[in-house]
Length: 565
Image (cartoon, rainbow, N blue to C red; front, side, top):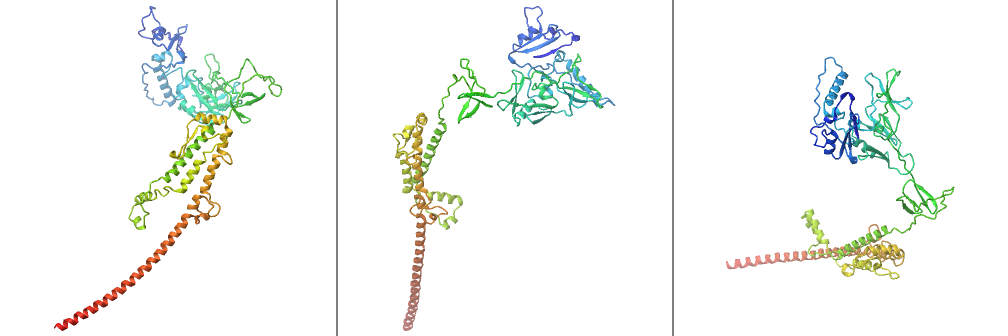
C-alpha cells in the first residue's frame, strides 16, 4: 500500500477532493464511493480520524500517482551577495511550495509515486519507494561529517562519497545514484559473486539467491558506503547514521518526533538457508550439495521429498538405516541414446562414402577435352584453364575396376549375420545394387529395442574381432590404402598411385607407366631427329642435282642459240 497521512492542521475534507461524484443512494457520496466505482482494480479508504487517505491495489496490481496539473515552474534570481547554499535552499523551498499547491501535494504524495518499484528508474528517484531511507553522505550544513554507528553507538566508518558501495561474496560494487535498479541488478547478476538479484512486482520484494546449492554460508554481503542493500530490504541491521562535528566532540543522530533514533534500514529481510540433499541408498546415508549426483556410476536426480505411509529412515550411530523396509525402488536401465546416435551417424557417414565412390566411377567423361599444352595455357585465362581442366579430369575413374571392387567389398561386409541377427534385426534395411548398397534406418523403435534387449548381439555385429562389420570394413580399407610391405603387397590404390615419402612413391603402376611413356617419348624424339636428318640430306642432294641440271640446261640452250645465228 501507498499511505500518506495529512496534517491535522490542514483540516481537509476528503469528500470534496473529487469532482462530479456519481449518483448513489447516499445524499452525499464520499470520495471512496467515487473512486471505488470508477477504478475496480484499486480501492481508496480514509482513516477513522479523517486525516489520512490510502490507495490499495487489488491482486497485487500497481498503483501509480501523478500530477493532473504540473506545479508552477520555479524561477528565482540569486540575490547580490547571497551564498550558493542559501540560494539553493530558497529554490528547493519554492519547488516544495509549488508541489504542495497541487492536489497531489495537498494529499502528501509525490509525482510518479507508486506502491511498486520501477526498476528502470534511477536510485535517487526511488528513495521513498525503497524499504528504508538512504544514509546521507559528506557533511551537513554545519560542516559535520556523517558517520556510521552500530547498535551501541560505536563509530564504524565515515561516509565520504555520494556513491553507494557494497560487497557480495568478496566482489565489490560501486553504484552511482543516477543508475537504475535494472543496471544494479545486471551488474550483480553478471558478476562472479555467484548470486542472482530479482524483483517481484507481485510481492514488491527484492530477492538475492545464491547460484551455489546446498548448505553453507553461500551469501556474505554488506554495505560499505551508504546503505543500498539495506534500503532494498536485503539485510537486517541496527546500524545508525549520525554526524560528528569537526572536533569529534559532539555526536548527533537523526530522530523522529518522539526523539527516537531513526534506523537506516528495516527488519523485514528474511533469510532462507540452503540445505543439502539427503538420500538413503542401499541403507547408507548419502548427503550432497546438489540434487544431481552420481554414486557407483549411477546418476541420480532427486525430484521431491519421499514420504510413503509416513515412513522415515531410522539410523544408528553410524548413520546406517535400521528400518529400510520401505522406500522407492530404483530400476536401472542402460542409456542407449548415445549408442543409437552413433549408429545413425555411422549409417549417414557410410552412405556418404558410397555416394562419393559411386559418383567417381560414374562421372561423365569428355573425350574432346585433352590435357592442355603450354602454348594453349599461355593463350587462355585462369578461369578458362580451370573450366577446361575440370572437363579434362572428369570421368578419369569411369568404370574403374579398382574402385568398383572396393565398393563391392564394402557392400559384402553387411551381408553376414550372427546367430540370425543382422541389419534387419535393428530396423536397418540394405539397398540392392540399384541403390548402390546404401543403408537406411526404417524403424528407430526396433533399433532402440535391439540396443536395450540384445546389446551383446548388436556389439558383436559391429565389432566382433573376426566377423564384425567394423572389422570387415577395416580390412577393406586396409587392402585399399595399406602403405607397408613390399611391391605387390601394398593396398590396391597404393599399388596404382603410390604414397608420398614412401617406397611406393616410385613403385606404383602410374609411376611405371609415366616412366615408360617418357622413354617412349624420348625414343620417338630420337627417331624423329634421325628421320629429319635423313630427309634434310636427301633434300640437299636433290637441290644439288637440280642445280647441276639447270646449269646443263643453260649450256644446251646457249649452244643451239649460237647455231641458229
